[in-house]
Image (cartoon, rainbow, N blue to C red; front, side, top):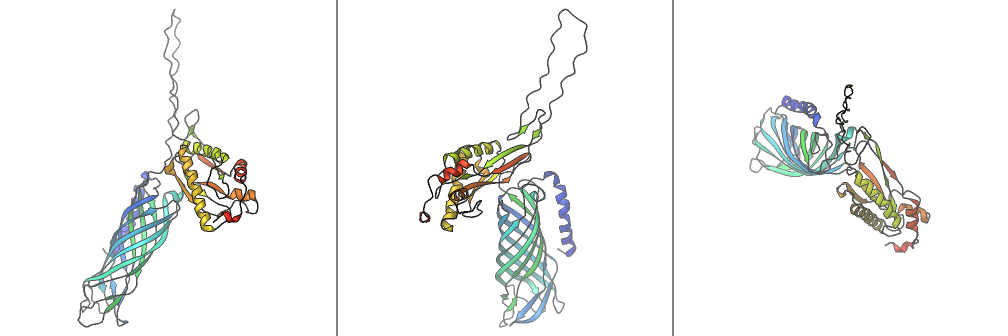
Length: 417
């Protein structure tokens, strides 16, 4: 592949994205696999012998292709495994000789961060950046620079930094325009001439790729289609001369409007904005038991979530400041898990709920009084996705929930491990 062909490949991306615009839908989080390919620009390489430079090799624009697989988290982190093959023709060395290929096969464990949001610009276009570490196996094929280079290979630690932008075509398919900068430690190659010292060289390249990723998650909730307005009533019949017994005429009856699941509509079947209230609950000291006021609050939360099955919610567990960090982190996770189990038992959609403990983090009050510590021993909710026309109102625990969390009395700090 020459330089012009590589530039044409890159320039084709905007056209492909524009043609796909009618299919836009936010892609799922979760596991994914994909393919990638594009142009590879290998930097000039110094061949060293006994740590002295004996030749400098330049390369034509080449190509790269590979496979990817990973997992996309809702918080933007995306761990990934990436396997690529790169190939570049030798252009010339110090003597002008240029016969052969330089090839490299790489395997990287990457960590990317996607900038994404439930709505707006970053809901469909996801810029990202990150890097990876792994191994690169590089070797020459049929190379001759006035002296033959053995078809030997060296496998060295490799590193890469990268960035790009993903474009969600459907809820499962994401197209990407990706950049990679790859380099390795210096490797040693066995020379073709018997008795000659090894040849040393590192691999260094810049790669521009087009990628396609397929996500296996369930489709993200989409805004329901607007219901069609009912047909207008039929016009009244023209006046008719009086007759002894006028025949009864049929009366047009408009069928009742059916609201989409989880939505409310007005008299004309137009979706109206609705508000969902999600309230936190408090816990007793060193306990994951739900108090009666907490159960009453969670019954209301479960009912709201059941009416809005497309809401995605993270259940966040917290503790007060008493006790060791490690123990409090475990206790907060158990509290979050207990609330998730209770909500599912009351009809909430478990596939849209996630539970995570945060220990002592993010207190909502100081920890200097029993009441404030009770407020910090809580489970709160964060909505990670809400459909249009749904406003989510997050509220703190009720006074009854906080009071119930204090009733058993606070115990000495030795109660915490």
